[in-house]
Image (cartoon, rainbow, N blue to C red; front, side, top):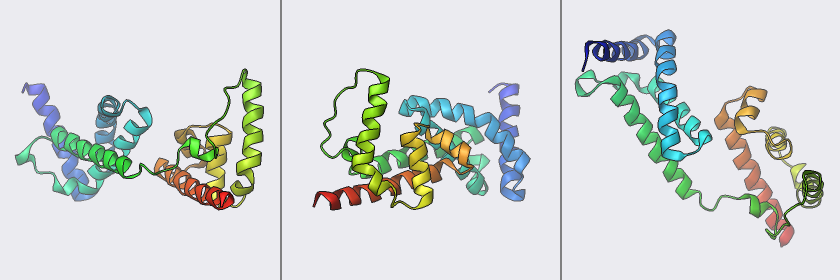
Length: 195
């Protein structure tokens, strides 16, 4: 390890110590600004999906904040510790994904799953709106307001989860939770309508 690398490693160890002992937000901000882009690049390699990579970064850095007191410099450098947390977060995300194989997909929303390929954007929008109003709209109105708002922004206004998070000023995880809960309610409502 060169002198420069050694000094940098020491800087991150000190920052973790300040976070652990004093809940130092400035030290945490330094850690975040340095490691978040590197973690995102790591996540992109692992997932190939920016949204999942960003979720991994968020969960990893939250764990760094919460668990900074567990860092032990005698067992390894700060970057190794942080990337080990990221690896564990990644495994947790993959496990959750495996356990949610029964989660609803877009095809589940359309009852028969057979919809034609539209010829033009205007036709697609018209067809989507007609299908939505016939099949989902009656059930959409029964969602709790917070879930309905997120669903409308994601599925009707076609905004990304991050855009909705920014627009509403709520965490990305909250957006995802509301969507998951709303999809579960819609699935139940559609199953009830089929029976």
